[in-house]
Amino acid sequence: MKSIWVVDDDQSIRFVLEKALARDGLPVRCFASPSEVLSALQDDSPQVLVSDIRMPGSSGLTLLAQLRERLPQLPVIIMTAYTDLDSAVAAFQGGAFEYLPKPFDLPHAVALIRRAWQEREREQAQAPAAAQPPEMLGHSSAMQEVFRAIGRLSQSHVTVLITGESGTGKELVARALHKHSPVAQGPFVAINTAAIPRDLLESELFGHERGAFTGAQASRHGRFEQAQGGTLFLDEIGDMPLELQTRLLRVLSDGQFYRVGGQHPIKAQVRVIAATHQNLEALVLEGRFREDLLHRLNVIRLRLPPLRERRDDIAVLARHFLAASAKELGVEPKRLGEDALQRLQDFPFPGNVRQLENICRWLSVMAPSQWVRAQDLPPELQAPAPGLAAANPGSDPAAASSPAAAAPEWLALFAQDAQQRLQAQDPHVWDELIRRCEAELIRTALAHTRGRRIEAAQKLGIGRNTITRKIQELGLES
Image (tube, rainbow, N blue to C red):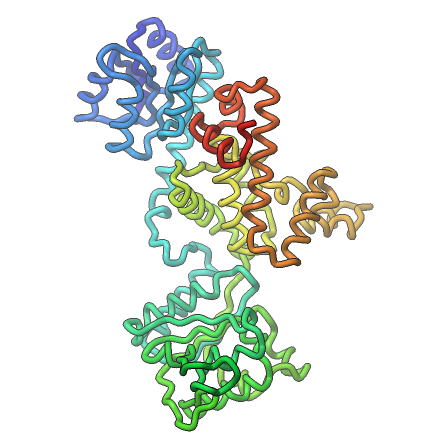
């Protein structure tokens, strides 16, 4: 069994920690200097390392940097005197698991080290899952069926219809079908038919000739021509206008099309994959979708399960999204505590995988420390999950259906603001609301610490450099 390594030039600190950890059943090795640690690494490695920040010959920060190169997943706890708080906060941003101010409360120190130990054990147990290629993730039986279907279709040019709720990853499946198909060397071209104005969609799909309509000053290739020799992905096919459904049906039937205003047919050497979150059969009954086009598209149908039907995948997806967000932001990935992970696995995720990804982005910015607990999760996960209240006798179904109804007044106002921005299609809604939240958090922390930035950063669980940068970015200097 790997042990906890304690490195400190102060013998009394080493003695106290060694005895306390041993009483707690944790194996310990002690070192008086970083050079002893580096020598020991030739034959062994620790499960957790606890290091003082200032030692003769070399510092804990230098040792931290060397360990990050050799053992990037190793949890390192930096011990520091209060006078070294600047360095400790910098170390935290440099990859330390946590820092422990001296003089420390011994039970607190042992609890912190045990938490690092448990987190390391959990990461090691999940290492095979983390090594899975990120093209598509999923261990659940529902996703294994999807993977098997992609495999069966790998040598086929057949048209595929992908169905599933919004946010389930239909485009990812379409890309996987293309990547593992005979036309993988050709282009993959995607178009969301619901996102393009009705009067422009025909030209977007089929292109146009010069002078075909006002403003057509030059000929233009449409998506069918751009996808020649590859795959055309038609997302949200259920929103395609009826007159364009007729043109699409003709392309699928005849294998050729005309540009808008064109006189010469163009051969369509394209594999078509379509996707929708709607019930096309119901749209056919309502007269909003052509039945013959449905039959043309529905050669092979792949149904993507919603996230609530594949809860076993939530943990691996969350770790993947947290790592991706951290890489994007240039910070250390957050880690999910057991209570936070359980809360995620209990949540119904009406927005499916896309909602989980957004939550992980939120945590990467807003969670106060590297270790995410249930209370650190965003507001929609703090209220009872939709449907839980219905199980309680006497509960109000109308109130249960609204997450904001169970939230504090400020959160309801925040949700109302977000809703208005979303309805107005504000492209900056995420940036603006996160900016306001960050600004208010920093103002409150600075007021609490009477303007002492380092102390405010410590209480918020962020680094000194981070709070300085945020104060400048948010215009809080005054």
